[in-house]
Structure formats: C-alpha cells, structure tokens
Length: 219
Length: 219
DNA sequence: AAGAACAACATTGTTCAACAATAATGTGGA
DNA sequence: TCCACATTATTGTTGAACAATGTTGTTCTT
Image 1 (cartoon, rainbow over the protein chains, first blue to last red):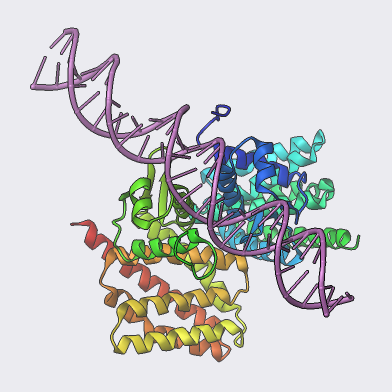
Image 2: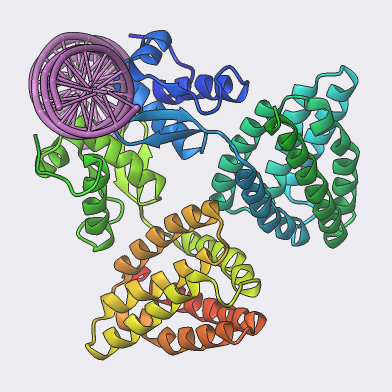
C-alpha cells in the first residue's frame, strides 16, 4: 500500500498534487503527459493515474485526446473571454441578490483580511489565492451547489492562466482595496452598488489578463 | 475484444447506455449499483465500469460514497429548485442578448418542429427530448463552451427527474406552443420579450414539476 | 431478551501484468 | 521527394489478485 492518505481516495490526493504542479507552472501548457512515466514518477498505477487524469480533465486543467493521450490545457484568449463572461453571469447576480448576513460574507471578509496581510509580506501567490477565495465566497452567497461546483472549475482554469502569465503582483495587487469596498457595500445592504463595483472589477481584471496574455503571445 | 464501438471509448459508449437506463427509469433512484454485478451484466471489466461511474457522476446522475459504492441519484425538491435557479440564470440572459441569426436559432426551430410533430403522434417522450433540445439550443446562443457543458449536466439531471415523475404529457405538452412563440419573438429581434416569455415558462414549469414531485412524495 | 464485542463475509480501492487497438516513427522503393 | 509499409511506442481494456473498509451475523455478557 501507498502512504496513508489524509481523507479518502488516493486518486483525489494525487490529483491535488498534480493540480498544484500544473497551476504552479511546473508543467508547461500543451505538454503531453505520458501515462507510464507519470505513473512511475508519482508512484501510482496507470489505472489510478487515469482516474486522476479524468478528475483534472473535468476541472478543465487537462485535455484528453482519444488514443493520443492527455495534455496540459493551454488557455487561449478565447478561454479568458469565456471565463470572464461566465464570471459576470454568475457573480454579479450573486452579489445583487445577496443577503448581507449570509455565512459566506464571513468567508469574503476572511479572504479580504488574508489578502491584506499577504500584501504586506509581500506574498503575491497568497494574495492570488485569497482573491480567488473571495470570489468563490461570492458564488457561495447563492447557496447553489451546482453553481459552486461549476465555479470551482472556473477558478482552477483561472489559476492555470495566472500561473502561465506570471507577474502575480500586477495581476492581483490592484484588487485588494476594491474587494474591501465590495464587501463593505454588501455588509451595508447595498448589494446593487456592490455588484456595480464588481462589474468594474471584472472589466479591469479581464483587460489586464488579456494584455498580459498578448504580451507573452508576442514572444 | 468487445463489440466494435461506433466512435471512441468503450467507457463513453457504455456510459451512454447506462445513462439511458437511468433516465428511462429502469434503475430506481437511490438504488445501489454493484460493481461486480453491473460489470458482468454489461460485459465490461470492473475498471472500465468505474470509469463509466465517474462519467455519470460528473453528470450528476450517480452519487459516489467512498468505500460504499455508487447510487442512482435521487432528485429532491432542493435539486429541482437549484436546477431552475440555474436555468433562469443562464437561459434568460442567453435569450436577451441573442443574435437573431445565430446558428443555434435553427436548432431551436428544428426542436420546435420536432416537438409539434411528436405531439400529434403522440409521442410524449420525444416531445420531452425536443423540449430539452430547444433549451439546450438557447444556451448554445451564448457560444460559451463552459456554459454549454454545464447545461448539459443540468439537462441530464432534469431528465432523471422527469423519468422519475412519469406522466410526460402533463410535464411537456403545455410548453410546445410557448416555445414556438419564444422562437418567433427571437427571430423578430425581440429578444427581451422572448426572455420575458421564457421567464414565465420557467416559473410554470418549475411549479408543475414541484407539484408532481409532491404528489409522488405522498405515496 | 437486549445489547455490545468480535469474528466472518462482502464490497470497494488499488495494483499489476498482459494483450489489443491505435497513433507515431522509421525505412525502403519509385 | 514522397508514398507505402513495417516497426515501435502509447493508449485502451481486461482479469486476477490483494488491501482496506463496510456490513452482517454470532456469541457472550448482563
């Protein structure tokens, strides 16, 4: 038997580890992942690795081509556009109709605080994580298990894109203060205004991502 | 080797078949699916069956409990509520901002026509399928691969709920004419009005489903 | 007789080795 | 050079085996 895993599921455990390597940029987008090599490297059987692949494919981090293998997903401009369209569709109504005392508001507040602390270290990777958590908490305001599942996939894809782009400071730093404002408005019962601010945020963030993307595309 | 499969992937092929059995009601919601028995019955290996399970779990048709097995998902009222909330969130903006000459409009029209023909046979199961296709086409108006993926899962879960409820006539018949109207408004460039009509449709449909659900819950 | 401890039993989780099916690669001939 | 064909590598699938966990049934105690 392998090492004792914390919860359940060796596959899920390994998937977590592989996800970090993908998001962390250790695996280049577009790169093919050989079943035999990776299975040996991760010290799991091919069958289990295949399950890991399926899990990560579901999250949009891997792409599976029949009889050819799996590849690290490579986000394109179309990917970014689609992601932000989805984010707009989900996050804005979530904020608009949110109940200011919803438990997820505490999650939002905690995320903002963590981001502010990490900003002073500074630890931009943690700022990025906290920012994602902030938006995940926004979706949690809906209490919709399906939306939360769906958004988790979106978050994974965004992290992949961020890791690909590097320069976490310029990608995450500008939004910490804005998140605090959004939170404040929501707590004051002004969900609509908070949503408007979020809309701005999404526009700016999307533009930033796209231009960073254009930059590396010229290489 | 097994029978020659049409496209690629024995697992996907079997998943299709199993999905039909689940949706068709051959498998009772909540029922546990034994790996050994099902693998023998479907004439595939346990490993492949496990992959099938994962595919259907992703679609929300199966529920996986670690070390206990997989079970046919059993939709609850909470499921229906969540599904309709998601449908509203996705379908209404899709229609509102749709381009009347989008290719998906043809899919909508084809779906309406098929439903009208099936209504006269009458073949209520086909009416149901056509109705689903109509709404799938609405989501396709967005050109968002992520939304389309997501909605496919929602559709699968709805079909499971419909199959569970039976009485396809009262569940599907009332909406054929309304779908035609929605299509007409969209083609006339009145996306907003079409969306308003769709909103009504969703309200009525949700209420119908819920009351049908309450009926069987009293058994 | 009721309930708890414990021993079978069954099922899922994971691995391994093998072969089939398909794609990628290399080689020879026109 | 480029096509056809054999070779090789990789994925797809299987079956058997064992470990880990859950379930069930039995016995012992009170």
